[in-house]
Amino acid sequence: MSYYFAIIGTQDNPLFEYDFGTSKQGGDGQPRFSDQARHLNQFVVHSSLDIVEELQWTRGEMYLKVVDKFFNNYISCFATAGNVKFLLLHQPTNPAAGAGAAGAAGTPALASSARSSTSIGANPTSPQTEEAVRSFFAEVYDSYVKAVMNPFYRAGAEIGSPVFRARVAAAGRKYL
Image 1 (cartoon, helix red, strand yellow):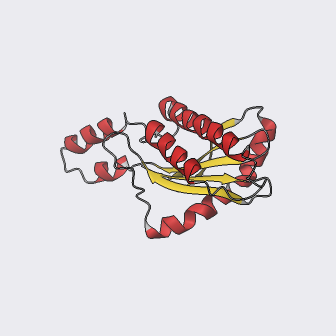
Image 2 (image 1 turned 120 degrees about the vertical axis):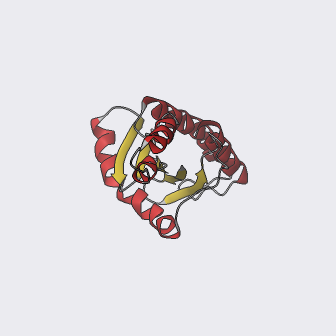
Image 3 (image 1 turned 60 degrees about the vertical axis):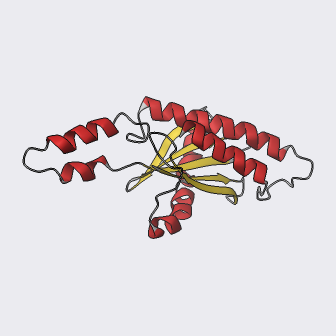
């Protein structure tokens, strides 16, 4: 499973971007986006902002869950009280590819897809995945608040702190 995380400011400007892969279930933490998808990630995330703004005013919550889907990419959102948006694009592993490769018996592919469906990344809308994403957002939000409270941080500027980047990476390894 590959992830692209972005923090979008109040003027729809990117404040932080980070892409990573899963560290769970034997993952190495490296993103597996194709070259074409890597270039589209920022566009896909920004295109979901209209839906996010619509949902954040109709729901009274900070964590908006999965707000948009673009082909095999799901976008989850966390909107802060200051109207800064945390967007996580996650591209699940494709269990359908294994099922299509099965022969007449079909049992090996069925067994492998059943095993992969229990992993966090197999179903982006499952309660386990939603809880993992929520925990990721909560930990990143805590780090974000600490980063913007720094007296040397200028409001609305990109977050270039290597400590913040390391904390986002650690939260990704821990929960996703």
